[in-house]
Picture 1 (spheres, rainbow, N blue to C red):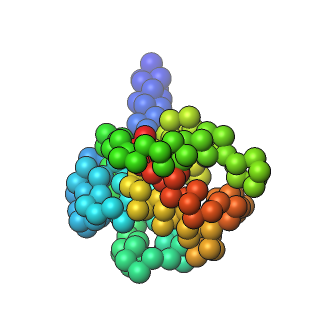
Picture 2 (cartoon, rainbow, N blue to C red):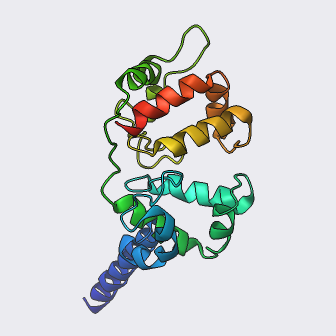
Length: 209
């Protein structure tokens, strides 16, 4: 009987340790709030950026944020400010906690476009693409509402409500080859087929979703 109790206690401890490890692997949003203090200077305490050229992180997928930081650290993605900031995150758990914090915030929301004609053009490209030039519809990867795919993915981010300036910059960088950390060159392939006018229209629509 005593041996049975000991076995049960040991089994319970194993389960509790495993649960703790799983929680650590996913990141702790509460701890991440304090750890993300420096990040908040640009991305805002609630994950809403302080300036249009900084991306909103509110409600972004944790694993996507993690992958982008890793890419900045590895030099696969380069930015004068972010590369240095990413390098300062030396512990994997800190990265996971920070990413979990921003992922836990209320998802970013767009502001309705003031240029309805331009947004309408962007909407067509977002949902239908451009068959004449081979532009793939954005919604195929980023979802009907721009909310990306499954939260466990680290490839297709939430784009709905992202800042227009940031969207234009990233699409333009994919188009020119200045950004090339997309798996299998998926985004680069799409962006290279888009005209600057199409990029502007799509960004106008997506920012207001």
